[in-house]
Length: 106
Image (tube, rainbow, N blue to C red; front, top):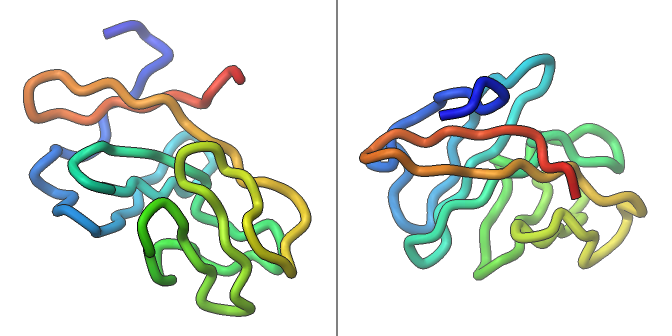
């Protein structure tokens, strides 16, 4: 794995339809399992800083538990206010059962 990826959890640590958090550099990242595919976004809502991993997941959208802003876990895009700015996304690589992430360059 290249040096800019960081090993985080194991695939088996993130069951289908669940979210888990990890520390990455100075961020808390939410790793999400939707239909067996893993996604990673910044765990902090861009509205008022709510912890997204404590919110609800419905298909490809996570809803912030504080004020209900929703984000697309694939792109970080805001799907419902009150948030106006997207959350950062992270690239994921799987090596056997290990999840490696790095900040997305998109």
